[in-house]
Image 1 (cartoon, helix red, strand yellow):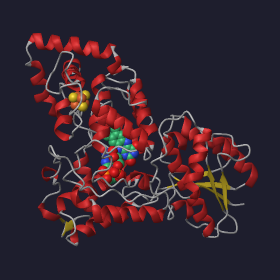
Image 2 (image 1 turned 180 degrees about the horizontal axis):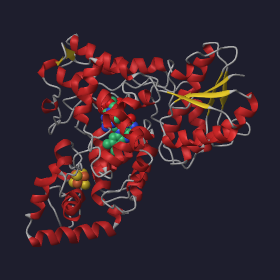
Image 3 (image 1 turned 180 degrees about the vertical axis):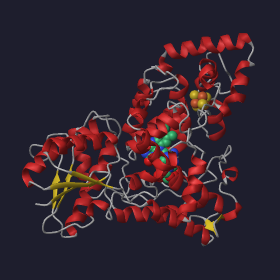
Image 4 (image 1 turned 30 degrees about the vertical axis):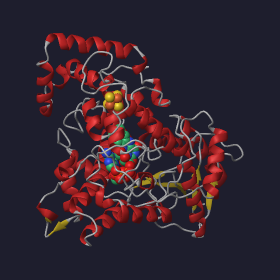
Length: 512
Ligand code: FAD
Ligand code: SF4
């Protein structure tokens, strides 16, 4: 046999570079389900279901092209549990001349496979991942020599290079960024019955099979599968994209940052898992959004806001991941040393915003960006949770979690643990932000307006304490000046009361 083509669970791209020059007579596709990928962090059951279901469907697609596919099932005979060991077994079975694959998404997986190939005395040809707009060599050249990387400039460059939302080289509407017109709240009345729910994909035979398998093999892993209805094939992902463009894109920007009880999706696309597993191309997503604007079906502010997430943030964090790893994973610029509170795994806390977000996460394997950044991420930042522990939590609990996108979002954006390589300042805010953007504070035993005392919102107390504690580390961050000045202006008695209450929070169940 000539080439063993390795396809990982997040490489389910029908147009993958790994298939270039595929020779039906002499090449073989190899895919393996391995327990290690659900155990190295205790993966949410729905996340494992997402991966296994999409992989099994993809293997069927490969066979339908008339290609041979050696598919190793988790419940198959002699499954060794690690990718490297399974690869060794596959090489023994097929005796290939060469191993070929598209670049893995995870640094860890790439290292393991390179090591295994070396041990086997085989060449591992790693090809560029064409799924992305931005190649890694291009990003490295772009990043070289820049002390700080900022999304806004990278995003403009991407739009220029790929001709997105441009007319004669000029941004449509005369501006690159329409953020000022986005980010409304639902006010007191909430979204009502207006939000069209995303199209659901009830579990088919393959999904039902993997749900049963995950419950049997990984019964102690977190999360539930009862609500699993994500797209798991390229065809379903296309239906989900059309549904989003037609029904929710127009209000995406407006309510991008809003949160509401029992409304997990609001106007978000929930396309991240389909894109990260490569069932759906970002080009297809961006083109569909731009076409909706040009056809007058969605306003420019919504479309620009959405496209910025895909062609901007998504490509940007991948570039950061691959230029900064492996050191990036160890970042801890604020010397945070608090263990992750246990309630992150159960949702059992009186703080309503955290209870709602974590419970929803465990139910659906989904939370939208502001829930991740400004509720679960923010509390960990303010409490000073060890970056590695909160990183592992985020990598475990979302169906879309893959390290190249999760890690920079956690270490860089949410925890400021990279010291500002990615974001110009920490996303630090008090409970008042959550009160403004959601209905969570209604019915919560705490008050976001109080800074100290037993009724004070823990976010508010810890926000002020965070500023006091990290003043030396943050003094040079250009956009922190005002926040630090406000903290310095607090009367001494109030500062002391905040520090006392913060100490109580840290030693009690709100941090446990
Ligand atoms: P929408 O709100 O509809 O956005 C559209 C698309 O834009 C998303 O599908 C996603 O592909 C992309 N996008 C939006 N924001 C970002 C971002 N900050 N970085 C990269 N891409 C972005 N995203 C993941 O895909 N996997 C993760 O593991 C992940 N972990 C995160 C952890 C933290 C702490 C934070 C703050 C963000 C994280 N994100 C992650 C980014 C973002 O929250 C999710 O992509 C988004 O919530 C997915 O839901 P959606 O598809 O409905 O997104
Ligand atoms: Fe969260 Fe504080 Fe609001 Fe309670 S009062 S929901 S803890 S922000």
